[in-house]
Each structure stands twice: as C-alpha cells, then as structure tokens.
Length: 380
Image (cartoon, rainbow, N blue to C red; front, side, top):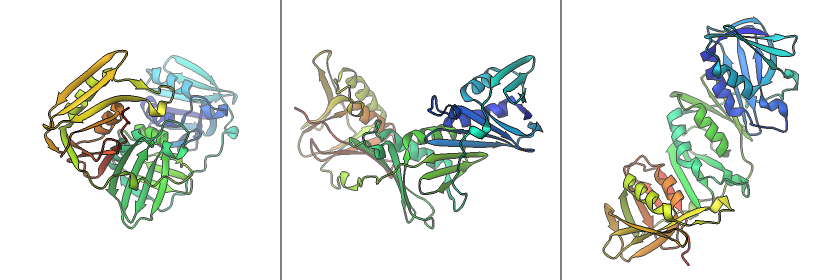
C-alpha cells in the first residue's frame, strides 16, 4: 500500500472514525484503524462493541500508487496526524511490517497488525431508508439522551427508545427517576418500528454529525441501526428487550401550575443547590442534590435547602404565573431539574404539579412536543 493525501482531508475523516475506537479492548486489533486502499478509494474503519464506523475517501488530493490494506494503532496514528504541519502526507508499508508516515522532512514509523485478523464488519443492507433532517435528529438526541440510566442494572434503560407509529415518532428516555420525551412527525408511509439505541452510541453520533446540516439516511435491521451521510457509515447495535411503557407515568391533570422565566429559574436553582446535601453517593444512579420548592398562600415561590454540615440556603423567585388552590412543598434533585430545563428552547417554562409525592411535569411555551418529568423525593 502506498498513498498520498492532503493532511486536512485525512484528519477530518480520522476525527469521524475515532468515534468507533475503544480506549481498550479484549481484542487488541480493535484498538486499531483498518486502512483499505483500492485503485480509486481509501476506506478507514473502526469498531468497538457498540459502534462501527467506516468512511470512504475519494478526494482529488488522494493519490493511490499501490492498493493494499493494513491495521494501524488508532490513537497513535490520529495523534501523529494532528501534530504534523505538512500539507501532504505519504503513507506506505515497509516489508508489510511497518507503516511509514512521511511529512515534509519528518518520517514516522508505526508497527502494523494484519488486516486479515480484523473482524469482518457486517453493515445493515442498504434497503428502504428513512430519510431524516440532521437538525431534527440532533434535537431529538439532545432533548432526551441525558435522562438515560448510567449503570447496567436495567440495560434497556441505558438507551433511548425510538417508536414510530404511522408517522408519529415518540422518542423517550428514562432512568426510572425521571423521564424525557419528545414527539415529532416523520414520513407517514414509512414502516412502524420500535428500537432502543444505546445512549453512548447517540452521544458519539451527535459528535460525528455536529457540523453536518443535510439529510441523513437511517437503515434498520433486527439488532442494528445504520446511519449514512456524506461518505460515512455509522452503525450501532440496538439494545435487546422491551422498553417500559412510560405513558402511565405522565399525569393527565394538574391542579397546580407555576410558570417561570427559564434562565432565572436555572440561576436560582444553581445557587441554592450549592448547599444541598449529596445523598447516596455510592449509588450514582440516585445521587441527589436535593432542594425544595414551596408555593406559598400568597402565590410567591421559595427554593430552599438545608445541609447539617455546610449550612442552608433559601431564595424567593417571582413566577410569571401561578395557578394553585393550596400551598405545596415538593423536594427533588436540582441536577435533574437543571438538565431538564436546559433541554428547552423556550424562554418561559411551566411546572405542572399534582401532589407532594407525585411526579411533576415541565413544559416550554415554544416546545409543544417536549415533556420532561421528574419524580420527587419524600421529605422525612
């Protein structure tokens, strides 16, 4: 193999490929990037237990003097290319044992692994794609993925559920202490599906398409999802099991409504929560920064917390609207509330409450299709 390529072109594609590179793996060959050069194209492939990524480079700067394939140490290769200042880079094999990287007056050598030992990546057959706007997919991920479970006690909850029924796509994430749900419409002629995608895969996909503004094609199989855009194939495994029916968690009536300026509410919550107790640190799934919200008889609202070790805090905040017949105090995780609030584009948000120990819902005036739900904490 002997190729020459523009450094910026190579680096741009390596940044995409890096999404599939594990930091460590029981299969050392998966810590490498597979390079495969045909007479006209250069393919780069990376894979871990969740994600496989492949890019096809067919750039005018690419010159292939000799076709071939190899596997090179992924992180080392990316770091070298990042540090080089040369505009053009020449890559070639020496005795099929070493990859030589030539850039201006510099020469760098990397020990290679055999491409024959690299696992065969079976990408989903390219049939019947669902075409979706990249901005919409980014919005769906950002609005929900943060609410997934962080541990593996219930593996299905570590993913985001995408359920399409006759063109209504419902995207849901929950860790059993909170819930995030966004509803949108897609092609109503596309087949129904119900899949759960690992949140870590969605995080990497979000980074990969960050600067991409055009449509994406999604291809489904029984246990894989393939996202195709530009010259990139991004494939992730799907989680096994049935995602829980969360529709019953969302209350249908709300006797109490309180509306706030979103940014002001975030600022107050962040200040008060500095004093809040951190409970159950050993269980990261329910690490709370607990604060209380009190609606008084005079319709003013107080946020407060007490910490036997540090001290306490309370601050009044003026809501823009309150609908309540009786005073109420509800306690919850400030971290959950802040993360939920930041998912809204609206400048004003409403908290809908039913009782002190019942879930409360957050909605934004401009985010009609987004629902955030938080379970309160019992006050002893």
